[in-house]
Length: 144
Picture 1: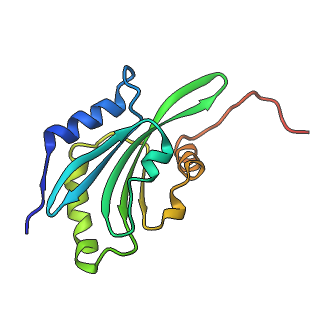
Picture 2: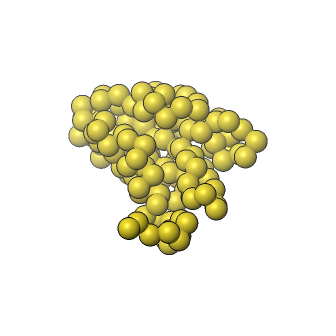
């Protein structure tokens, strides 16, 4: 069974998340049998987190504001979700399916693979983006 992908809708969702003129902060791409499609888009992290079930495989793309008081910037994170109840065959197929999605979702600072809902924490995502971002200057004031 070959996986197919809804390129037009996934591309539109990707561009919506990346757009400075859009409030959309995230998009989720799920499987319907062997077809990958955009299943949801939104603005709140908790709603993003709710999109991933234990028996599902999915991909997520999220925009987070990073930086300090002197420099705010948007950073993007791509994630692969393989729920703990997903079978061995579907798990094994994720690498080739992910390659298809990454032909569209090309710009991100961090890529994560998650298999446990406990990993879905905004602080964890921010920490990964911060690590990938290099130097952090802040105010230049040190803690006493």
